[in-house]
Length: 273
Image (cartoon, rainbow, N blue to C red; front, side, top):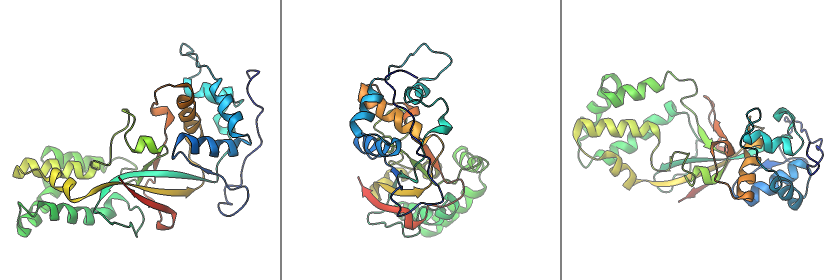
């Protein structure tokens, strides 16, 4: 370990104790300052000491045996990411669009469970061009058509975890402030396929109609427990900000519920953009 690196802190938590204890630490990347604060608590260091230790990490970009993101971890004295201290909870940022005032009373649903409401929202936007009977007929045709975007939508259902729900660890990544990340506040992939198919069939700009009827937002929630790679990603997020490097895919982690919805009780707020 480099001489400047701090000693490891024995800070492993009982992950069955999620709430209310003095040891409870939420990893929060709402901003780089929030990330520094939560990581400093997690590593048992002061904010200044953590910032200084990370800032002294110089990446060897020609090292073929240790990836840049792992060099930051090793600089702090951890040869194995599995030995990193674990938060009791993590704050996540789900980027989406919704009708203004939506409260997400049911939490964040799986794609299949959310589809009826999504079709309803699209139908309302399409009403300026399509009659109710035409919309019902179109929805039925989408389920069995061999059109490119319809097929693309149905092929995604063969992928494990396709229903999400999904979220970003780093708020700025959710807000598409880094070019490597897709902007889901414009439209989700499910509706993107349906809108493209509708426009191919009818020639009307359904996506524009849906965007006009909704507003981008972040659903911010705190999920109990750790997530693989989240602490390493947060360390790299802070490192790149502190030393002035552009952010990368490695400085963010992505949450996937993989078939388990996000509970309404986990939701902290809906931030309209």
